[in-house]
Amino acid sequence: MDELLQTEEGLNEIEKIANHIRGTDGAPMKRSERVSITMSAGCTAVVAIITKTHIYCANSGDSRCVLGRAFTTHELSDDHKPDNIEERERIEAAGGFVEEGRVRGILSLSRALGDLEYKQSGHLPVEKQMITCVPDRDSVERKNDDQFLILACDGIWDCLTSQEAVQMTR
Image (cartoon, rainbow, N blue to C red):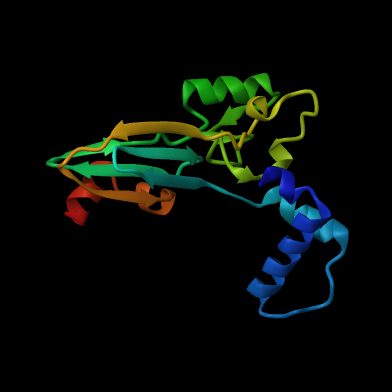
């Protein structure tokens, strides 16, 4: 996705989305306007694949996957926050800093799709950029008492703990 956002095709898609949000086909945007949107726009992602034997999860950012199993709660992903030790180390090694729990005092997560302004160190590979899109992955074996998965963004997790969300869902 990050690579696509830096192509002409990706910039054209950004323009279509921006026009849709504005509710107009509007005049064509200048390339600099499309690039500006692309550099500062970003999102998180969490996905789960359920097979007969396993549940696989991947996330980038502070979206989370939680499994309700029997009477327990299992987090299948970790939130990527700048205060996490490994995340902070990568951010600082890439020339950034964490202030008040935010990258450069601005961004409240340490992994995302997009947010290209934080991925401009040409000498660093994708996984070592200040903000990286590289997901963490996890899997668990399925059990007969698996009940449900909750996949949600920080709009939920800033208000509820994983346990509270599982209790509400039950």
